Image (cartoon, rainbow, N blue to C red; front, side, top):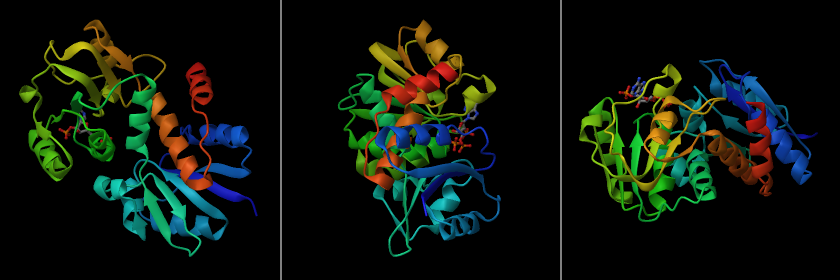
Length: 270
Ligand code: ATR
């Protein structure tokens, strides 16, 4: 039986993961099948059980199942434990389920690919939801000089920062507490979806700074347009998407695919 993989989501039809993993499989010559499965909102564990019973070896997990996936794992990576969420499931030989989250390392790899130095950088993260929590451990592991989490709901940012204080210099607060300049500003809010821009000071960016938005689209997001007008280099979330997929693929198959041609093809098709 062919090794089966999938992405679980709800909805999931829009997911680019099947395209990305088909490209990785072709590139590496790995014989796998990768599909998109819409799991029932109230029974993610059942969907995973049924999948593994029919040849499923691993899966990606997207909205809204990352926390449910976290809860069903028998063992977890340290970064997944910190994130409280899982985007990669692996079925072990003993039938146990291992969970990891590759979003943060995907972000780090994409920033490195763009020549961003994270060690010693002054970083601002916008948002304090699951997307931001999921990338904090890998970002802090790079040794930034400081990391500030700014959020519409200030207490949420402060609490999130407190959860990670043992890993580095990290603070949190409201947008009014943001004091630049920063070498890197990452937008992890869902404000871009609504075309909104968090209220930010004009002098946010240090010379040579980079602005990253976890969102992407055919056109730059409001945040990236705003950042470009203020002299920042801009990077959208498409590269992070491909890099997190590559890390999942590596965990499943032990092969590291080349991401650049896959990213290029996706970009053309946006
Ligand atoms: P995700 O899992 O994608 O992070 P989430 O947990 O719902 O989703 O978090 C969404 C984040 O975007 C939160 O930080 C939210 O701010 P609040 O905590 O104050 O709700 C932020 N957000 C959503 N819409 C926003 C907007 N229009 N302006 C600023 N921040 C926004």
